[in-house]
Length: 467
Image (tube, rainbow, N blue to C red; front, side, top):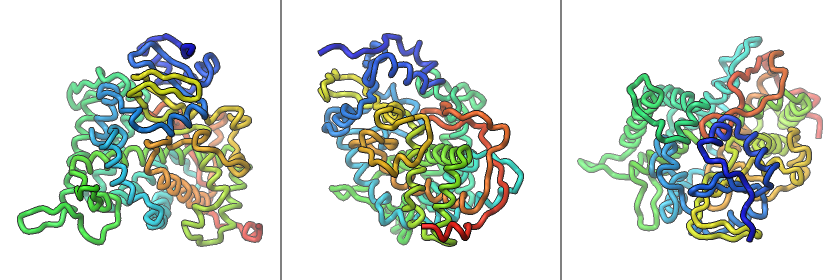
């Protein structure tokens, strides 16, 4: 079988472009080498895959074929999330955690979060003033952080809530710069030179967040004399309480350390990524007037006080969110899959030890799947049903994101709440199309993006007559 095409450039030489201009890096290699290519000589060899047939085979392969990277390759994430994070474990532990974490994200449970998402969005929007431009990303981060603290912890007020909100915002803002990506990719840079050094500051903020989370877990336990029971306080429906109540096949709960690490995963992965997606969606709605007119008309047609589930089911709103996640996926690739044994799929033979990166961005920009792929056009998702190997913004296979349904619902309801209540516009200074920038391990809109509130709005009567 012929060797895979690709570049032999060592990692230290290709890393600056991969970190600072990742889309250009992927596009250049795709043009040169095709939809499956190798970069560097390893070890391990790194292989990027943008062929849906190959991705299907990888997603459908038994989980025993893969394992998580060695500790050194994931140390940045380990610092942030912990050793027990669902993103950083595999095998029996991964299956156990995934089973225990699924109940809070069940469809019936999702309905309970709808009103909360809309209410918290309205609270943030209450500070907007007509004619005063606001930082769009900061506003979306504030909404998603409030949602995640309320849904995950059941916290909406109090000293612990305020301190967690402040610390998480500070930590994520610091780790969201291109410079921070070098700390993640190059563990040797993770040096604590004191509280004024970049990494030292991260370490101290993270330690305070950890203490607050463990204190919240401790307080949720039901006291029973001098003993502490593992059951949470009765009557609570937040994700932490449901996680504490979950039991595995042997009747065992998640330990405090496991709870902490999974909470950090939900807080960081769920908050930061959804904020980026919402920022992009609102940018496209106001960059392309035809899209903005279409979505407002669709939302107005729902009436003055629609049920959140009816909003989340609106077809054009769903297509708008899908197209937002297609054109600039927050994560350009799925998580690393290291092969534990050789794998042959769709005519390709991948050796044991190979690091497979399934490239979401490149698949989402294939001309054969998405004609005129650089054009933002939600209608494509109303015209065609894509397979989970052609469209997979939340990954796939046994490592797909368990919070994808929650993230999509949150995205739809925040967008609907904003667009139904306000008329907004891009400032005149935003004349050029935007491209993503590196934000830690993810891609995000540039930080300078702003919107100007013009006036509050009400559904247009003529729109209500359509349909």
